[in-house]
Amino acid sequence: AALVLIRGRSGLQGYLRSLAWFGLPALLVFSPWLAKNFLATGSPIYPLLFPAGAMTPERIAFYHGGEAWGNWLDVFFLPLRSALWGAEGGPGYSASIGPLMLGLSLAALLGWSSRPRAERGAVSTALVILLAAFLVWMALGRFSIYLLQSRLYLSVFPAYAFLAAAGYAGLSRIKSGGVRLGVIAGALALLVAGFTAVELGLYTLDQSPARQVLGLETEESYLSRNLGWFEPAMGALRSLPAGSRVLMLWEPRSLYCQPLCAPDEVLDRWLVERHTPGLDGRPGAILRRWADQGFTHVLYYKLGAEFQKAHAPHYQGDDWLALEQLLAGLEFQASFGDTYVLYRLVQ
Image (tube, rainbow, N blue to C red; front, side, top):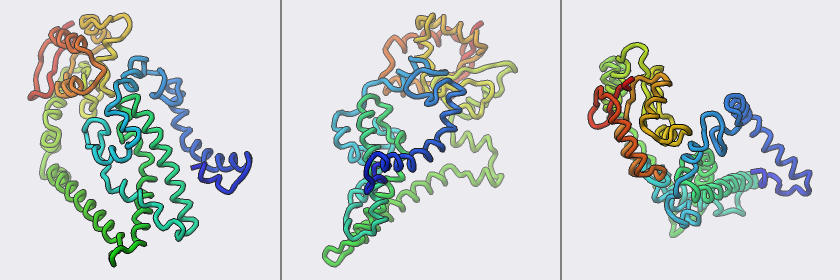
C-alpha cells in the first residue's frame, strides 16, 4: 500500500513520508502483540519462524516442514486453483473461497479512465495489497503444506472483496446487446448469497440452539446432540476423582474439561514426545515422563490420530508402532463409540 501512496512524490523524502503514513500506524496497532509475545516467550513473533518458549525446533519443523501440496501450477495459477479447488476441511487450500470473488475482481479495471480519481486510487491500493499477498502465498505454499492454506491469508481478503466490488461497478457500466453485464453479475451474486443463506439456515436449524436458549432442552442434551461422542467423553473426564490430570492426544478442545485436562493444542504432542532429547522415542520413557508431570489419565482421540496418519507427512511407520506399544502399556478405562478411548496411567 505504501508503494501506491508514493505515486506523484519524488525522492527519498517522499518515499519515507509515505512509508511513515502507512507503516507507523500499522506498527502501533501491532506493537502490543509483539511486546506481549516478547515478554512471555522471548520472541516478538512467537510462535513463528524460530524456536522460543514452548516452540521447540521439533515443533517449528512440524509446522513449517512437510512436503508441499500440489505442484508448481500452484505458483502460476494460485488464484484460480484456490478458488475452484479449495474445499472446507479438504486437502491443500482447506477453505472454500468460490470463483465469484475471483471473477468479479478481474473486472476491477474496466472503465478505468472514466472512474473518479479517488476511486482509482482506492482500487490501486487494494490491487497492490492483494498482489503482494498472492506473491507471498505463492512462494510460501511451495515450502509447506500448511502455508498453502487459504485461512492463513484471510487478513488480505477485505482487499480482495473490495476489488470484487470494483469489478461489479465496472461491469455495471457496460451494455452488451441491450443487457447490462452488471445485472448478470448481480444475479450471480444474489444466487450465491441465497445458497449461502440456505446452507447456514439449514445448519442452524439442524443445531437448534433456540431450544436450549429457551429452556426446552438441557445443556447436556444440546451438547451431546451437536458434539457427538465428545460430550460424553468430557462428562467422563469431569467425573474423574479429585486430583486427576488428563493428557489429550490429537484432541485440541478442552473447554469442557478445564482445568484437569491438557489439550493437544497444535496436534503435535506425539511427535514432540517422540523427539524429546533423553527419551529416544521409547514408549516406556514417555509414559514415565507423563507420570512425573502429574498426569493420571490419557484421552486418546482415535479419529484424530487416524486423520493424521492418513494426511500428515511428518509421521513415519515407527511413530505409529511406538504409539501402539505406548497404548498397550496403559490401563483401559472407557471407550466412547469408535472415537475416544480413556486410559489410566499405571504408576
